[in-house]
Image (cartoon, rainbow, N blue to C red; front, side):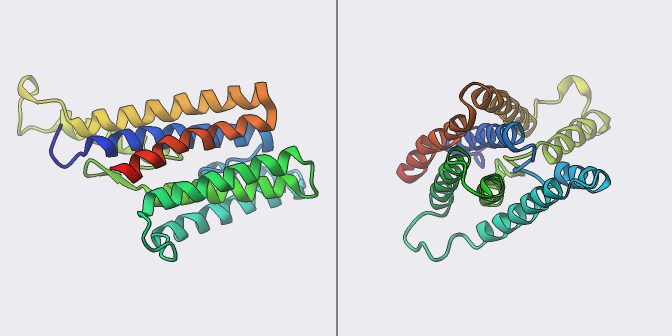
Length: 221
């Protein structure tokens, strides 16, 4: 593995991708809204408008706006929390938001679904903006589209290059890293969906539990 890829960073990327898949799938099962990316919610918003489902329209728009706010806030490196490493601070806030989202659903409070969507979208937006690069490549830990596009582009460029014969081309560790992040996201999505189908709203807390060892790892590194 090249020297610019720190092993702890790779494990954090796998863990965050798993949490990103978990949170996005679990949110869709519970609230029928994606909370980890924008594209799917734009499509759902258009469908909701076409069917005159204004509450669903509001929920999808809330998810989009709040996710983008979370990305913007994470770029500020959580400046008010001076003395804390940026990523652990972001993940700590994410844990709080996930717990708040789960409790909003469990308590049956007024507008509980909207509070859930806002909390989860903000949490995953913070995560997506707070961890953006590993091993010299750009990554997204809350959705796959960008990573799949990068993976296909890198593979295509590799095998269409005429500068190095196919027989002597060495495996690209960046491609392997993207594949592992992709696998972690898919496994997380399956786990998240299964947890909320079995444990209902409390299954959402699994994402918060998974973040705790990642926080401890980052603080100690």
